[in-house]
Picture (tube, rainbow, N blue to C red):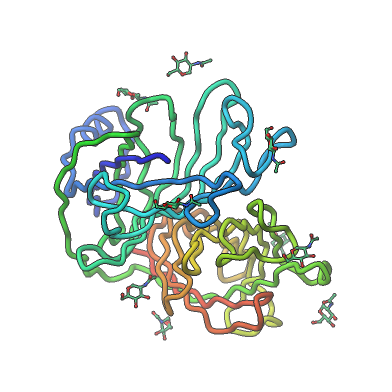
Length: 338
Ligand SMILES: *[C@@H]1O[C@H](CO)[C@@H](O)[C@H](O)[C@H]1NC(C)=O
Ligand SMILES: *[C@@H]1O[C@H](CO)[C@@H](O)[C@H](O)[C@H]1NC(C)=O
Ligand SMILES: *[C@@H]1O[C@H](CO)[C@@H](O)[C@H](O)[C@H]1NC(C)=O
Ligand SMILES: *[C@@H]1O[C@H](CO)[C@@H](O)[C@H](O)[C@H]1NC(C)=O
Ligand SMILES: *[C@@H]1O[C@H](CO)[C@@H](O)[C@H](O)[C@H]1NC(C)=O
Ligand SMILES: *[C@@H]1O[C@H](CO)[C@@H](O)[C@H](O)[C@H]1NC(C)=O
Ligand SMILES: *[C@@H]1O[C@H](CO)[C@@H](O)[C@H](O)[C@H]1NC(C)=O
Ligand SMILES: *[C@@H]1O[C@H](CO)[C@@H](O)[C@H](O)[C@H]1NC(C)=O
Ligand SMILES: *[C@@H]1O[C@H](CO)[C@@H](O)[C@H](O)[C@H]1NC(C)=O
């Protein structure tokens, strides 16, 4: 079991930065954070014997490894999906105030480093919403900084830095913050349609399970809320809810199931538009707590017509035709436009 202390520093950067001069960089480093939070999250990795208590599982390993034991000396190539409780102190048994959910992968052959994509999903009276992270984590370092790429709810449009500290034991206070009410500078509604490969629909499937925990496989979604399954997709985007309407682009990337007790997913993908109305790419990353009727996911960047855009995408699930087909209407609101 490992506990990680996380000091979160959010820069409430509402202005658009247009300069990257050295002087400007200096100024950025000198900025005072507008919010500071401290959390602990606790990870118990699946080892073949602790199915009930494990909060994480290896879902993919290189040829020389397997999914019950981290491979080799540096675990290079292992991909781990996790659903860890977050607490305000260093005690695993304190009441969790949310979940840290997502994935990491070991990405260095001769030493420990990892790359993480994950979210803090809060559902307590103190905090609601999500904080989404992505980046490198040089695990050998006692303290490591990782980027906050977006936030929703109480953490609307947040950016900042999280400092991860392994096995730190001092506690600190937390703070809360109210959501800003801002008007979007641009909105867009699209639908994407996903047909999951099930062993029989190779021709029509738009997505496929590419990694699963030791207790699963790649044709059937795994037990325990599909925890650990990673799905790669190439879904058509339409402007209405009809799968057979002319697509205006593709939704491409991955999602993974990262909830053990309830359905929950994490998305890292892009909308690639190639129509007369829209050309360019919108990239999204973050938690999608599947069971909620509407879920907010950060828009972390754009190209083409969406140059440098940031915002929030609201996912709504409106059709379930078995586990194999789902359709997601998405309302995208941009709060930073160029
Ligand atoms: C699960 O955790 C409980 C309490 O921490 C412990 O008593 C039990 O032995 C654990 N079970 C497994 C399978 O690890
Ligand atoms: C996984 O690999 C370890 C070490 O290489 C080995 O001891 C263990 O039996 C393997 N487990 C499975 C389920 O293959
Ligand atoms: C958040 O908490 C409320 C009230 O306890 C519950 O109804 C809801 O399902 C929870 N949402 C998630 C995503 O866990
Ligand atoms: C691995 O990391 C440790 C701690 O940062 C460092 O002392 C060591 O030299 C590194 N080893 C290699 C092979 O990079
Ligand atoms: C490693 O930690 C030191 C001091 O704690 C810090 O100055 C340095 O930037 C860290 N390196 C990385 C790559 O995070
Ligand atoms: C693919 O979809 C078409 C039209 O929706 C249908 O006629 C066909 O049976 C499907 N094929 C498979 C293998 O599911
Ligand atoms: C995958 O798992 C399911 C249920 O656990 C099983 O019915 C199916 O035969 C498995 N498929 C393969 C290809 O192993
Ligand atoms: C975009 O559409 C045009 C015209 O249909 C086509 O020629 C081009 O290859 C498409 N580009 C991509 C990246 O799909
Ligand atoms: C999504 O956008 C449509 C059209 O702008 C609007 O009617 C609908 O209320 C929006 N839904 C949500 C949940 O924001």
